[in-house]
Image (cartoon, rainbow, N blue to C red):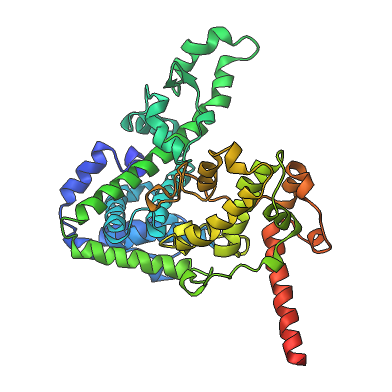
Length: 437
């Protein structure tokens, strides 16, 4: 029988397992029982021994490696089938805490490594729900109780909502409380529902999907909070050497599976942007936009285009989500190059954007992934999403005055794609000319 341990590493039972395990001294010692459980997993690929974790420490790294590789081409589920085997749950709980402690001890908050550990935890929870079978409903209800989500007021989820992990519009609220239990939904709303069966409406509005989403997001938030507490403690208490070794292996795994291909910012000085390669809509925005299209042109179009063109122009090709600090660790490029370009374009608008709408500076910061604040600060990164540039189709619809396509525009679907293609053409033309000279 599956227990909630398979989903929730923050239950009291999970904490008891960790307390009984004791010191991390043995996390890299071989465990024949763990290895046997892994080998017995149905569908597990046994051809390559390097795929099979033989210790708690290796299992911790495999949890992260699974998440990184599942996003790559050629991923084989059979390489990590044991992660979906409930028989592994007690080993897995200890491995989770080893991984989280290593992330906190070895990396700063908001770093790519910490973010990937948090994301991998949420993804593992979501995938495990899919293999629960007939016990799924019972486990979900049990975990919701363990996480204390019954009777939750929406303000208690403000951190999740503010960080974008959960959307307020997905929740059913009554007098400020989140309604997630079926009986509570029926008692609260059935008298007002006249044209549909209340139970089917509950399934449509709440149902298992929302419950699973809430569980995975709450566990992600608690993982992030736990990592932050470990990081704080690590400033006064020396972490265990094997936890630090695990941290090193986290870094090696991240670099091996998702090597950074955007170019080191420290080698890219001012002038890296190639204005001659900007598409017509961006050139028009930089010249200043009249009221009407002005706010969306600066906040939605220019902010995302300039930031990605300068820091991560290959985002659509690489398909690897990164944060600004992954590419610009001290935010120097954001502060000294990218924001001045955006602010100067805003000043050239008619009327100047910030004279009419000074709050749009907050929205620009938010579109770069740093939440609603005056300036991008490392501690706020991740409170919002770093948005990629809108597609040409959306520009045609929402900013028609800026869409004045040239010949190249007809062959691409996004301004950033235009920029990359034009840069390549300009570079090729320059090389050919130098060859003739």
